[in-house]
Image (cartoon, rainbow, N blue to C red):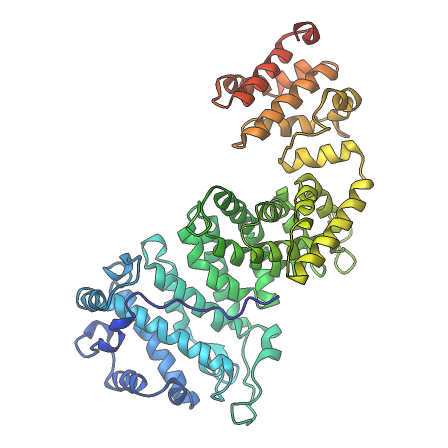
Length: 528
């Protein structure tokens, strides 16, 4: 499954690029030679400019200098940074007059991305490494910091420049990863061999950590716009094992899964052709693609399996996507991710001996999938007519694994996994008969009433059905566990249930009232 090359959208002021006058822009501190080089690059095809490694290096450094000087002079906070929609030709020219440094920044990033894209093909005989890594040891050029400064402007910065700077930086740094050496072009368009140059991965580690931290901070942000800024760079970084592992170790899996859950809930309530809630369908696809890429690190790295197991967020997010099925391409990549989770093993990489950590394998994730309601979603998918053979195969494989795993689980295990997942659904485990049989199991192996505490926490769920089921189950626990009434009072259930009696949702209101009555009344069956 391949997403294709990552691209940079056209700048909203691209029409003004050929009209930039370099001489009046003294704040850029360009030398006569640098100005001449910029003009020459405008008149010649990009392949000609990049045919010689020295000319290519000089051109790239001049563009990075433009970014550094323009940023230092205040670019990124002017008229251009406020643009949301593409400008007309006339508006672009007006922007050049009002905010020339903003237009210059867009221009420099656009050209820098063009350089990286052209060099990545290998047709010119010059590589990205030859341009951005210098000296006999292949050290990353210092000028990369101009790109990071753009990112550090945060919400005050220009959205287009932050997207462009992060993507360019990601592509430059990706070249240094040892796992990418085999992908480097070995011959130019004429068939002449390209001599490999040394590239120091060590010189790129600190920039990679800084870029990854910025991406994770965007994923933490609650707005769809912020996510859009980092998606191109994040997608690019998913191309190398080193950067995938760095993203995981930075807590990225949790925030990526959380963003997917928020986005999928927006899609379920909105017109899929518009920006919805927190993310568009396209954003959901791209974020899910990144999560799918990370699942290929499950088998060789136990810490990645631990990251995917935290809070059950990853499985819950993927099951949500399969359930709402916003687009076939989203379903395809979500199913592929779930299949990788369901079939992963701990054989290649287990926690160190003595470490207080579960091995986490496919069995664990299958239990989470059952608790999250994937079996029902898979049953629905089996009834649909898909033309994609990958989807058909993944549905069949997951259905078989889920059924086999479900057969091996007791009703109590199904209930326990469901509660711990936080995704409560009405069913046979939320009945009087179930609690008569399993009420005593609620105390848990450690006697800490862990599941009761989880149910109490779920009373505050924004999902009204979940809160209603939690009310019901707490009430049934009170009825069928000796001294259950005192236990839930001590754990603070009553204080959380009481406000729900006045909730606008009639069904939640009813279950809250019944729960309070069971807590307060000694002989509930006579009241009923």
